[in-house]
Length: 289
Image (cartoon, rainbow, N blue to C red; front, side, top):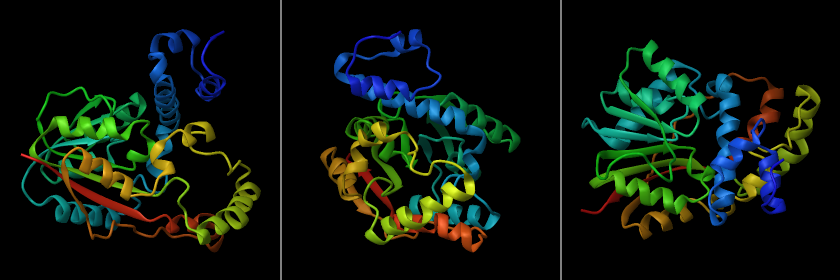
C-alpha cells in the first residue's frame, strides 16, 4: 500500500485505476509537484482507456467529409498556404495532425497517452502519411530549441496543471516569429446560466434514465478538474494574459470554428444541445524576433 501524501493527493491517486503502487513510487515527482504528476497520470490513463471511442466523441473526430473539408479551409485561413514545420501538442489520435499533413505541412504530433499515439500512427499509416508521433509532455517537450514554425493545439490548455510552463515550452521550440494557435473553449465552470439550467434540470436526468450512466461524473473526476487552473478562470482572457507575459503578440481570431451539426433526435438534442452554450475561441500568438 502506498503511504504518504495529503488526503487530496490520495484521493487523486484513487482515480488512477489500475495504477500499480510501484509505478506510483517511480513516477512520483518532488513534493512540490505532487499534484501535477498525479493529475497527468489520471488524464493519461483516462485517454488510454478511452482511445477506441475517442474519435466518436463530440468535439474530437469528424463525422462527415463536409466537416473535414470545413476544418481544412479553416486551418488554411488561419495559418496560410506556406508549408510549415508544425508541432501538434496533445495530438490525441491525430485528428489535426492528419489534416495538416494532408495539406502538405511537415507534422510532428506529441501526446502523453501511449494508446492515443498508437491509434494516431495506425490512422497515418492507413492514409500513407508520414507524421512523427512522439510521446511527450506539453509542459516539458522533448525537442530542441527553435525548430518549429507553428505550435498548434485543440482542447488541450484547459487540461494542463501548469499552462504557464506549457506556453514557455511552446515559445522555446518555436523559431523567431513562429506562431502558436490555441483552439479551445470554456469547458470548466464558465457555462452561462441558460446552459447550467438546461444541463442540470433536463440533460443530466435524461442521460441517467436513458443511458443508465452517471452524468454527474466528470471527465477526469471532481478533484482533478478542480485542480486545473484554466477551468477556474475567465477565458480566453487568461490565455491572452499568459501569452502576453511570454512576449507573444496575441490576436483573438475572428473566425468561426467549424461545427457540422450531427443528425440527432429531439431526445439527443435535449441531452446534449446545452453544449453549444460553451463558447469556443481561437487565439494566435506570434513570437518575437
